[in-house]
Length: 232
Ligand SMILES: C[S@@+](CC[C@H](N)C(=O)[O-])C[C@H]1O[C@@H](n2cnc3c(N)ncnc32)[C@H](O)[C@@H]1O
Image (cartoon, rainbow, N blue to C red):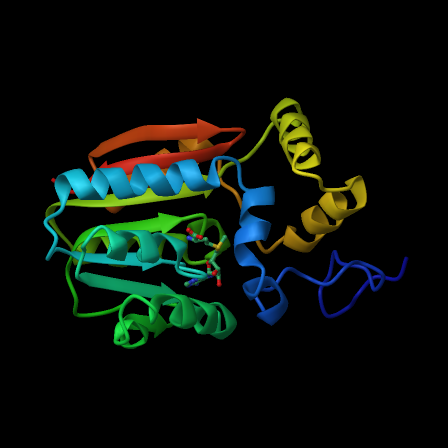
């Protein structure tokens, strides 16, 4: 193996890093179902919580909206002021196509940005399976917190650090979804240094430091944790 001088720690025969490009964007839902435990269950839970607690004209943004699955279902529930943000142009292209079927103006409410939106306030912010990709997590969370109205809701799902015991069960989950051991190993290598999980405790500390005082775990499976945070 030859060490890669540009990226110390990586070797020239390592697989390329994970990117949310066109190839993934066009088959995103299938990818998510095979790699994310409780993918649809968490989306359903997110929608039910918002349906019960946020008025239909409330402002909601989905951070890392990807292909727009959650926004699509929220729109079908009658929510009007929906926004999405993602840093992948290719993902947003797919989201725009999917969401313009329910509202032709939807694409204008999808923002291409690596940082959170400024000068807007929200009744609810969703960030499912995205924050673990963001390097400047503290700054991003602070921006989220500041833009939430009082009593606003923040729903966050993160992959957290797994023990070997949990990781083995996660591998079993993927095998049961039909993935080969080569595919599982390849994705694990691609995500190294790209998806940086924190422990459950580190996540709780981060949320508390940001200012959230009401934090609950509302779903957990194989190290994928969903937090409900309420801004007091
Ligand atoms: C696993 S997907 C999220 C899935 C999506 N929330 C859903 O419910 O289907 C992660 C997404 O985060 C986006 N992403 C990664 N870093 C980002 C950043 N700094 N700002 C916004 N989006 C980001 C990726 O482009 C990708 O679409």
